[in-house]
Length: 270
Image (cartoon, rainbow, N blue to C red; front, side, top):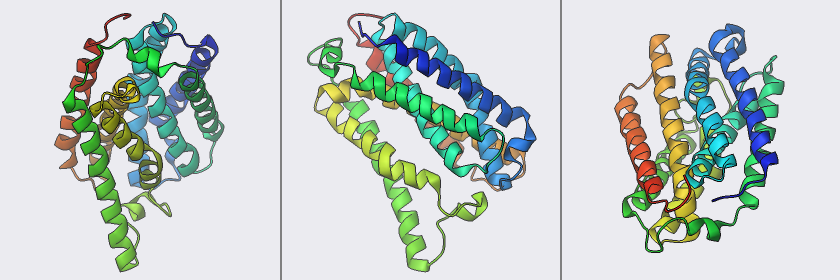
C-alpha cells in the first residue's frame, strides 16, 4: 500500500473541480478565447474537451483509489496531476486576461502544491517493493528516452532555424504569442524529466520504476489533448498539420499499453 496524506488528495480534488469549471467554460463559452488567434482558441477548446471528458473523471477515480492505498491508483493520480500542472501553467501565462484567469491561477496553485506535497512525502524505495526486484520493461525505458529525445530535437531544431534566420519559430505567429510556451515547458522541465525517468527505469532504479507509469499516463492525456486540438483546428478551418494525427494516435496507444504493462507487474495493492 501507499500512504498519502489526505490533505494533498483533498487539495487535488479542489484542483480537479477548478479544472472542470475552467474547461467547461472553454468548451461552452466562446468569450473565454475571444481574444486569442483562431489557432490558439481552437487548441484551447480542444484541450478543454479532453480535460472535461477524460482528465477530470480520471482524477476523481484515481484520487479515490489513491486514498485507499492503491499503488496503481497513486501512479495514475500522479500522472494526471503532472498533466494538470503542465496544462494550466500554459493557460495561466499564455491565455489573455479574462474572467477565467483567477480559476487558471487557482488550478495551478492547488495542483502544484498537491503534487509537491504528495511526492515529497512518499517513500520511493518503499514503493519500489511493489514490483518484483528484477522488474524492468526495456520497452518502457526506450520509449520514454526516445520520446524525450525526439521532441527535444524537434524543438531545438525549430529554435535553431529561427535564430539563424532571425524569424520566430514555426507556429508562433499562428498562436499570437512572443514565444511558443510548449518550447519553454518541454525543454526546461518535461523532456529532461521524461529522459531521466526512462534512463532510471532502464537501470531498474527505484525512481524509474515508480515514476514510469505517471509519465506514461501524462503522455496518454497529452496525446489525447493534441489529437483533440488537431480536430478542433481542422473543424474550425484553421491551418493544421493532419499528418501529426496518426503519430499522436500511435504514441497514445503505446503510452497506454506500456502503462498497463507496468501496472500489471504490481505485486500488492490494487
